[in-house]
Image (tube, rainbow, N blue to C red; front, side, top):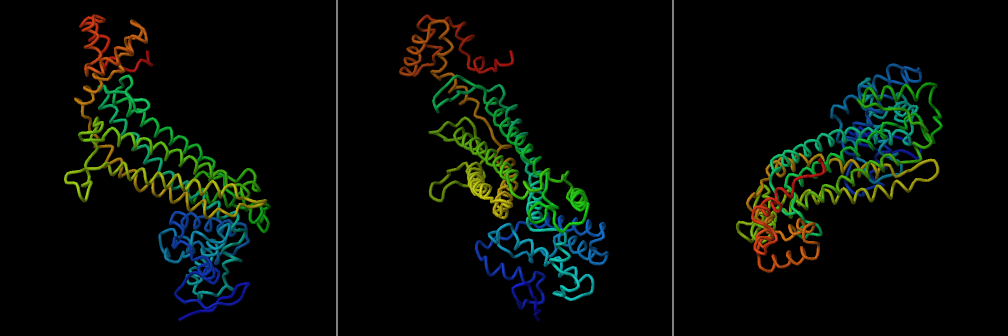
Length: 463
């Protein structure tokens, strides 16, 4: 069974079971690029936009009750997860996302027709353009749906970051009294507490989350109601304010009408800034993951100050080898997030005059990055961070033998003499404190008082 649909370019035959229509079919032929389709988050967000628009048009008298209710019922089905296989347009598509907007318009129209007792394709009764897309353009609806999708997904990410930060803080509390060598330039430096290192990781994650929260706030301004060029052409009086208010209630976000509707179409800066915050988060997570790999390196030839949970065999050849696979995976996830931000950055600067047409690429990359982080961070927290253990004996031994402890003698014997002592201690494989006692620089009691790594590592900034 098939049906014939017509658009401004002619007629096409479509399988009758398809809810998408002629413009979607053309897009599928024109853009067989990646095989990737819109993420469910964007589909749901766009369904919210279409539902809000139908309700606003109904309240303002530009759409009759029957058609509006049909569109709303169809939108509710999409929001419940139905018809997911009907969104078939590639993420790489016509600029501005017209193909995807029409994909949604056609699916909503054809499902609404069914619900109203009509046949699919009977666009004289209910049209994808004239009714579902009433008072709208791709140019204002796509960025609006993008903002909502990112707002929803980022809320989940903030929760995952809070859990990660909390887990790192628990590590910090557990290791709070455990001195170990500090390292700068990857060389021995004054002792620190292992707990202080982990408290810094927790703080970095929390600070990254705060940056995301700030950038997220800018996404609450939406372009809806600006239509094609920001003028609001073809909308009834009061539509913009009413549609955004309805959308805010439906989406569960505190949305606001864009302060300048022309800017809202021209500029993708709010999405670009949010992507930048994701990149900043990724860079911090890469740094933390790599520190964990270094601190857990060994078991014989590395630092070996901490032990990461063993979750799987590490080698197909070397028996008994265990690798820091969870941290390695986090690195790869974050490298991908950094790369996605580069694509977003190029797209954000590519706007011209009244419109930036690169919204589909920006949206797809941000939502993909959010999905990667949301999928993996809870696993990383649970299967890596929560199971980290410290090798207390090794941490203390390395701290006691660190030549950097000679720094604590510099106020008494001067920098150059302290440097000589550090070199001699290293050559003779002796702790600096022991050598200082042997040379009569310190008494045994003074060495225990001044050169204790735990005492040296205590945080003095709060004094």
